Image 1 (cartoon, rainbow, N blue to C red):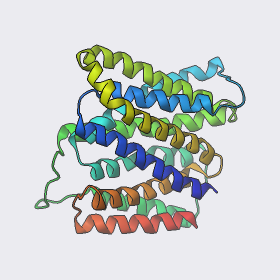
Image 2 (cartoon, helix red, strand yellow):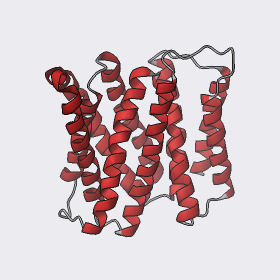
Image 3 (cartoon, helix red, strand yellow):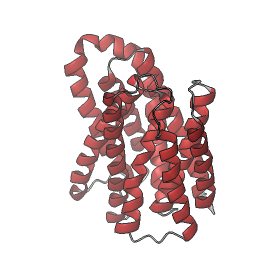
Length: 286
């Protein structure tokens, strides 16, 4: 069941990325407000799906507030990365966020991966290197710049710590208030992004609401659904196995979408990297 849910997670994650990327490329401005809409609907998803009554202990609030800032940074800098960089490379590089959760699972939670799992993890890392590495003489990707690299790496760091804090909260409170934690975290990011967006883009507010609301709704529902699935998957699979599998399937889906739909070009090394990623996913699923 856990492996099937990871496949569903991958599709939801891809759908969210397409919605955000489409708005970013077509309209460009209003990244704060548009992502505030995404965060709003993602947070509401956790409020609607909560069936045990809203329970948020005071001890949970510091983690949730930190997570809110991380979510806000992740939403916004991913948006900027899509706006100024290529879809495929942005999503493929975002896979480095798995480093945080893998090491947290192994070194902090004491998870004991099998030999095949270690081989799969190494294969995932090798796959990411092959996919993202470009030597002198390769065709340059349009839009790739130092600004893009800083934005996507900021997003990677934010998303990496989000996965750690989410798992920490589940363990500390024995899954008793996972929906509440996500609602406060993502809802807090909504407030942060909305306030900053109104301050910075108040002159473009009607335009952003007109064009960004639909994309924000779609992206928010997909985001809420994928994060809700993540809470379930965390209870079914070790973090050190879950994270590489999510990353491997993400690479496969990203590669296919970028190649077939967005018509982005790949080098031979990148093709080998994706093939290695497929093999890694199979190893992790055994």
